[in-house]
Length: 195
Image (cartoon, rainbow, N blue to C red; front, side):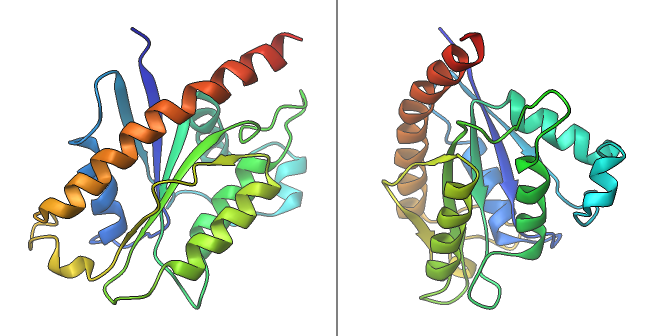
């Protein structure tokens, strides 16, 4: 059986980030045949086209390689000022650029997106903006089921372990759907690369 490799990306750099904790919770809820790698965005420098023209910095090159190797991305982001975080946008900017061989790691990449917030409404705008940004990079965002975890501070314990059964079931369904969604684009990307 084919093993799918998901790359998890948290838009928050906080050590005790609920969105990072949400990704770690996903690692315990994966369907059979799926593996999850969580990538830390903190080493990435701010995007600068002068840097790109001289070759991608080592942390950026490593990130691009992990994105390219993934069968799907799993992104969790908080909402900052009505949008996604600067760290996440920066990572997308680096991963969307073409290398000297004409490759873009985000081309044809299936993506599942979600957001965790301490209030009752947040992440709606952030997830909408993230969907728009990923559309511009030729990614394919899974539309259903949407995952937004409100009042997240009530759903994790002090060790940032998910304790809410309903959220656990939402996440499990989300991951099953992403595992079904992703191979369709993996196959297409492989055929396109060989054409």
